[in-house]
Image (cartoon, rainbow, N blue to C red; front, top):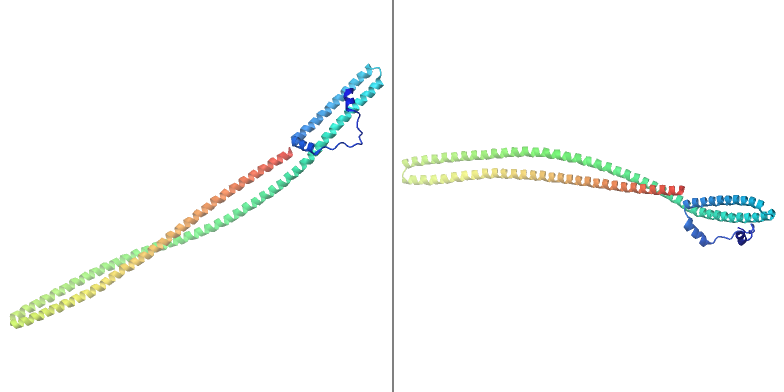
Length: 328
């Protein structure tokens, strides 16, 4: 023990400041000793060193008492023991000062990290608040768009219903008018047939009259008279046939024109109704497309919402983890 004390030499002057720690040692120390768990380990080590020092002091006191009793020169032994104890005390003080200085440096290095962590927490909290505000804005905009589309859909549905009712009413009117025109056409056909029968009966009656007159003239007149009568009969027959044919053609042409006009009118009405039906179907297809687009937008908004919620949860978990590390 005396040799160790002699090798270490005399105690240095307390007025002289300790040698500064090199930057390389500080860097190595920070690499090896960072973290709060290591800080606690260093504190425990200091406590162990202090307990060991107290134990050594008790042992020294015990040995001092024994040596006081055993040795003949107690004063000299006491001086040597005091020097030895003073040297140990000074060494322990140096170690304690070094450990304290290292702890202070570690604390100074940890404080910027703590401030950076707090700054990042404030920024992350602000970003989370901005995300929440953005989500609320998106929700409000989506709700407004949804309400507008719902109102438009209801209005278009009402218009389609009105168009459908009007189309059904027009279909009923068209069928009614078609039935009426069919009845009129049938009536016209019956009238034409009746007129033909009348003309045929009149023609037969006139032919019969001419035949009877011819027979009478043949009986009464001579051959010349019969020839004249025959010529007159022929002329009358031709005139009658021409008259009947002209009358039949005029009446038939008039009826055929009426019959041709009515189907054309019905065809135009039918084409107009079919065109309106096609427009109604096109409107229904357009409304279905808009509803599909609305559903797709709702799905996209739900996906964005889930993604933002997941991102907020991750940021919250990361902040909580950093806070737990800071507490440790």
